[in-house]
Length: 350
Ligand code: FNR
Image (tube, rainbow, N blue to C red; front, side, top):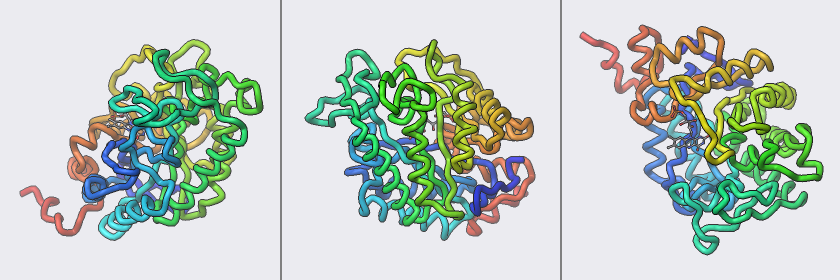
């Protein structure tokens, strides 16, 4: 099934391999450069069905570090367009972008918070830092929450103009959207906190605002943490309920990761450890899902699809090691795949 095409709106992915979003911490002023051009371009040469550009800040404070990607101005969008155009002109890959806001996990370097003077004052739903030694984040007012929704909408507009095929909203790993979802990081008493309906409101407003900028040629994904591995925290039942609602708001796929919001949470990590979350969301909410996390082998990836646990396979570290995993898999499985025509002799092994 790895080489069975799949469609989201009018966007057809030629295979199920997705380059998972990965921050490269290599931008100045949020602007992509030659490194990113080669980095993403080489995954297109490698026949990857969908290339997802790394977490990209919707405003300067939305970055994790000073060197993260951004899409809050036209210069940033123009550089990204160069990558998008290369992918479209030289491959059959599709390319998406993950729109993100780091919230209380921003202003860091190597996972350590840096001073305000070198970074910025972080923002969050509630005055709770990720780690007790970190600064208390600024609590967003309702007006400021609306501004953040608008930041996501503006970012989506720029991304659509740049030609991206998929927009993914980063709602996982303890970043701003996840901070609103979780009752452990969101203790607001207004319409954005408290009940499940209130905690998911920020994400739904973003989804609706972003969707206004999309059309049938640009699909919408949301990445969530299926669970945050904490007592009384966000859990898989919440994720299933959220996925049902997101589907009704026009979201085309839920990309199911886990963790990231609770410092020191105990996580048992093994091959495909997050696949059961993708499977539960897919089968209980009846939505398309992406599986991610220690999926490193071609056979393993195919089995996840065959078993109906997910619809797409997101690969992060393995695709850094092997940018050509998609064509390699097609060769091993004797499946047709796309490949640069310049490389066609590689299909002949003798
Ligand atoms: C990541 N990950 C990640 N996730 C995300 O949603 N947005 C991001 O920008 C990043 N950045 C990032 C950078 C680097 C260097 C790594 C290794 C990972 C998480 C990633 O997409 C994936 O979910 C995990 O790495 C698990 O998949 P693998 O690596 O086991 O295939």
